[in-house]
Image (cartoon, rainbow, N blue to C red; front, side, top):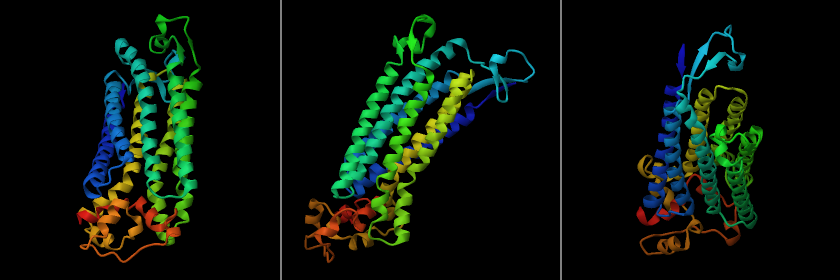
Length: 349
């Protein structure tokens, strides 16, 4: 009986890719034309869209060359080498196509680590736009350094996993090649990625909890930031699929599962990174409450340029904060997690 997970894999990957792309487009629109504050974090998230498009193309190539295909036979048949948990799985992929999969897998490894790097950098640069407290800024910069070091280490790990490297995708041509154990190349990268994900997710939790706002407000803002925790959960599920890679000889079918996990993990992370920026779009085009919000936004939350605009005769501002209240975690600046720089839209409303 021939079976395939390809329809499911195609569907899941394209749905999540589309949703992530829409949120990226709305982020660019909100920051560039509504808020008029297109920063470094937005450029990095735009680059993530390019990475994600390239990765989606790789996913399609995986499936084109047989990812997600298998043949399931009754468990009473011979050849215990292909015994799987639900019967014996025999690949139906053409040998030439099957030979392409390791090459594509190496390309995916390299693309994946640099996409993760760009995505995490976008998160951290967004954090830097929130407030001025020195300890928090130092924590973000330290995490950025950690992100750089881990990315370089993983890049070297993948590029040096076999000597010579072509032995990774063509082992028959290099019988004397030396390669690292799969346990290292599978579990070390995913563990380091999960570690940095946890650090990035945890960075703003304490300042958010201590901000000057009601309990419901604090919980709401923390909930927005914690959307990225879903991506961490999916990253943990990635370990299960990697274990299948190590123990299951049905490589092509397991690869289909890996495509699903990767698509969900990265696209959910992209949507989580873009979520705070969507508040501006919602308030301008859906709820229509942007003007009323702007009239109550403290002047201290504006940039110098927008402060100058706010002091023009056509705009009357009555609220201000003492200098000590502008330090992180000030409630008005922390609210920018879900209402990012809406005060900078003053000149547009």
